[in-house]
Image (cartoon, rainbow, N blue to C red):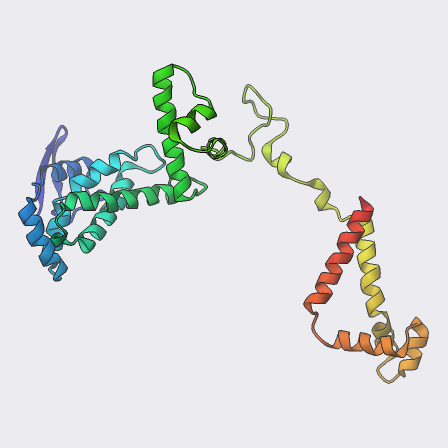
Length: 294
C-alpha cells in the first residue's frame, strides 16, 4: 500500500511496507519508520511463535515494527567510511536474522535480542567495506576503543594523551596500543611527494621509494653462473642430439669428456619432466651466485 509523506518541498509518494532506504527518498523512509508503532511484549511472543512456525506475515510484522531500532544502532557507526543508507541496509539484514533466530519462550524482549544481531551486521559491514584496506574485525573494534578513549582523555586533560596513558586507561598492552595507533587511517597515493612539507608535487614520490631498480637488470654474474651450471648438466645429451641419434654414446662422451655412466644419467634426466629437485638446485645455484656477486 502506498502512503503520502509531506515534506518541505511538497508531497512525496513512498512505497508501502516493502520499502527499503534505496527506494524513494531517504527522509520519507525515516519518517515512515518513526511512525511505525512498537510491539508489546505479548505481541512479540505471539508473532515470534507464529514466525517460528513458518508464518511469513508474522515475520514481516516483527521486522517492520523494529526498523527504528536499526536506525538507532546505525547512527552510532556514522562517519566510518560507509553512507548512512548502507549502514541501515546492513542493519536490516541483521534484523531479519534476529527474527529468524528469536525464541519468544526464552523470556527476554525481542529488541534486546535483535540489537546484538543488528550491531554485529553493521560492524562487519564497516570492517569489510568501510576502508580501502580491510582490517580484521578485532582491529576495527580496537581502533574504535582507542578513538573513544583519546577523545575522553583530551576532554579531561586538554591535551593529546600519550600511548602509555591510553594503555592504562583501557587496560591494554602498550605494544598493542602503539601498533594500533600506527595503522594508517587513509590510503596514501603512490604519487604523493615524500619529504615535501608544503605538499607541493615534484621530487621523490612514494612509488619511487618503493621501486627497486636493481631488480630490473639481471646481475651478469648470476646469469652466467646459472647458464654454466645448466649447460654442464645438458652437455652430454646435447652433444648426442647434435651428432644424430644414430651416433654411438662413446662418440658423444669422448667429445664432452663425460663418462658413459654420467651420460646415461643425463639422458634419463632429459627424457623426463623437470622435477622439483632440479628447480631447487637451479634456485640454489642462482642464490649462491648472487651472494658472490654482492
